[in-house]
Length: 235
Image (cartoon, rainbow, N blue to C red; front, side):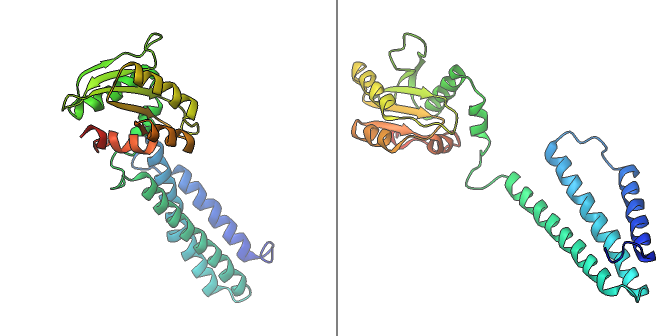
């Protein structure tokens, strides 16, 4: 406000407008990036470049040549430098979030499963069972499955039944669903029972599963299993 009607303010406005025009019209190496993440990175880098390489040096020149408003110009320069720093921090944070993590080598696997339909999810679980040495893996899901989606034999010959639930991540497997599966487990006289879900289990559901000899494969454990860690109960 103090600089609004001054010659320095006019120079700053003209310079900023010219810089904005150049930023909009200057050719870039790849004018049509296809990935949203790449576009975000280019925007961050472009703005940071303008602030750090043009705006701040411009303020330095104005501060050196203007004796009337040095304090205000220094304050403005400090504000611009603060914005530049925050942009750099934001860009670094985005890179950390989007880059693969060592503790989650297949971090996108859950997003892939969330996009599956019920049958595709059952086939995915069947693939994991075969990968871990199970044989006679049969996907049975359907209206007459009697609560069992997959049957199989472990590598050492134990009978195995699986219930698959592809629920939204914000939902929970509750105790009534586990209780229904107990009946199916007994009906098939299975030695191992897996309840595999793309969501968490309530505490009651986990307790009932543990008491009934059912392995509750919740969302986090499912991600680890899909990433290559075998289920302990299958070893």
